[in-house]
Length: 188
View 1 (spheres, rainbow, N blue to C red):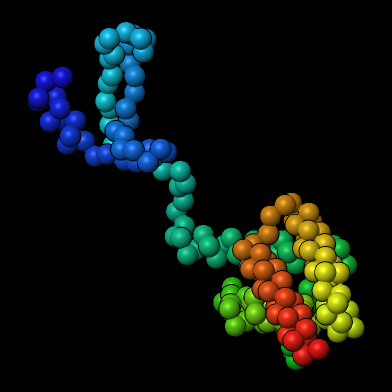
View 2 (cartoon, rainbow, N blue to C red):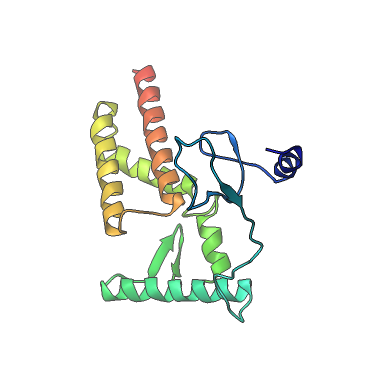
């Protein structure tokens, strides 16, 4: 290879390939290239600056998000009503109609310190599970099996995937149950 050709190749931005070694972008072996056993291979480098738009809409990102939230809220409300479940949920000392809450209110409810956030929800689940087990730390494995069974049923009901907050809540429940059992064992 000529020094000029090598200089041109050194100016092409490099990216990391799967093996972690540098590779050239858009490097392709030419279809008419000789086999690997031949002494000369032909390659061609091409770069494309064409940009493609996947989505086109006259709505702004905020308007699109608001419209998506509204569709999801209506879908959930309709689904609950079809199943005979009231769309009014308890949030501590008050109740809230999920068919009427705003996106901001929903975000507050699932925020880190929100009523349906990881901390408060996992606390309620742990309190219920410990109460159902009669406060007996010897039943820790049975409690954890019950929580896991409920989580797996939710996974199945929602097609095998849940929002991240659900996984975080599950992890928090298991950690809190372990801490409860450890503390109860130390006291005994």
